[in-house]
Image (tube, rainbow, N blue to C red; front, side, top):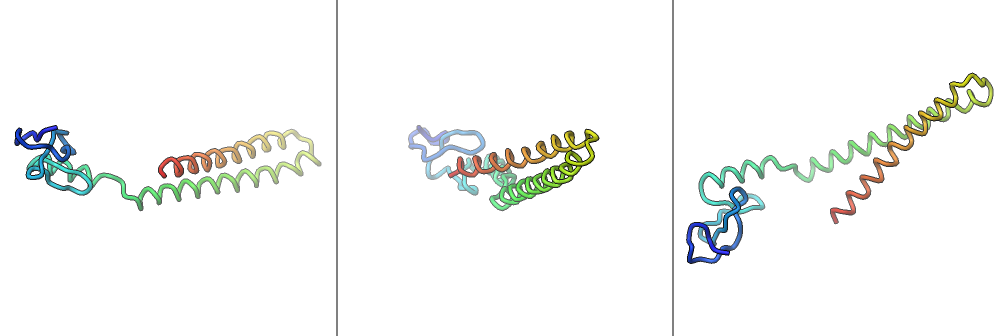
Amino acid sequence: MICAHHHEREAVGLCGSCHRGLCVECARPVGHSLACPGECEQDVATDEASMPTEESVRAIEINRQSISYLFLVIGLLLLSWSIPDILFLHDGWGYSIIFAGFIYLLCPIFAMLRLYISRHRRR
């Protein structure tokens, strides 16, 4: 691969904006990327600034995990509320509450499984 600006030189990387080859002289480091001098340099800087940070991704994972625990607690409460209804009252509401409880229990189980799988794919 050759440099887009100096055709006699070997490229050391690609511009993060226009994806053309860049030699050592042309390549401008911007964050974790390289860029052509000028407009591409500003474009890559803007793209780098808009990328989510590791801290923000971790915060999103914590929020998802908290919501999963909330659903788990709601599911357990619904199940515990329906047991006396089924055993003593027999008015039919207990079975629908049990169904809702299982749904509330399945949602966090699948969410935690998805979180576990996504964490291990990144490694």
